[in-house]
Image 1 (cartoon, rainbow, N blue to C red):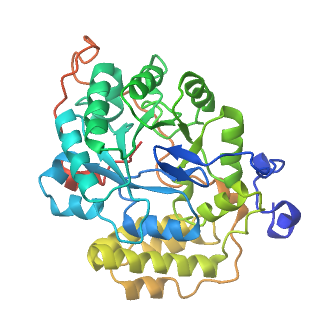
Image 2: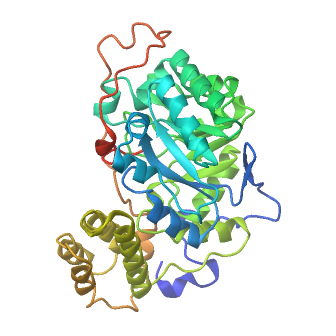
Image 3: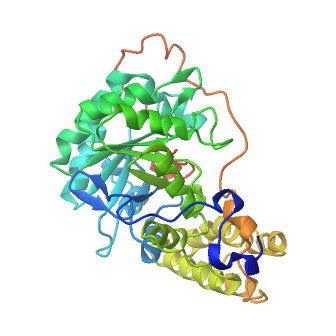
Length: 401
């Protein structure tokens, strides 16, 4: 669909051409404990992505709940400088939300207590990370295989939260032969978890193929607490379709917003029954990209910030004309001045390419055979916490799942 064809139907891919906007009072605010979130949209916790600068940028485009990247409990409790920085916020961030990574109930509970003392309004527990190094030691998406361990983690966090809502994010299971989401959801509800988020893929799928929205509908039919759906929200209209098809209470947006923080504006407008604005043209994208770079520099310092901007440049420019050559040039930037120079020759009037609305950014493609500890499946009632295998400095390498 060319720009001239966008017209009355707005900027939509063919799959969403006939999706109606939200009707008046069709959807309710997402209720997570005392929090009422409108629109019912949550930024997925993504390692190396959802730090304070990006959360603040997304928040300025639209309302919702914006979750930190996963913060390792052990690194946080040990006072690791980088971990504490990644868990930090600013006075303008309300509500403040942090995702915890831990497989040890004692560490998870203690971290929640400290976060509550620090003024956090919402805490999430990561039970979805599919990375081999994590699952091979019984962490991440391997944890829901052990329902009693899930219960211990949930109990420790909820009992230390003092009324602050605790949620749980997970995947469907290890693979299609070992699905864990139903039992994990039941246990979470029994232990006082306020809501569960389901990435409708297995750990074996990683980020490949299509998300199985029917699993979200299945989980929603089984629980009385709110269920949030995650997977394949590339456009605001995907969120409307997911909620209509699954009856879930809210959506979690992950890879679809990489290099597209304005997606949250489009989501807010679609849920308010307003045709979303057109995406920014290349000149406007350039200004957003540079704004993002300045925020990262202020937060991390120039060296780390410019290293991070290399991936962001690829995501922001994906789909534009000659973007492959542009990305190659920007992958070598080491200073803000070099970043400016690398963007100087762009055509600022070039419209956002409609084909890029559903272009995958970040991880995709391959599948895996999930690695688990030797004998891990022999006793599913074992609640012994597995050994932690990476520290806070490594956590940024891993997606929140």
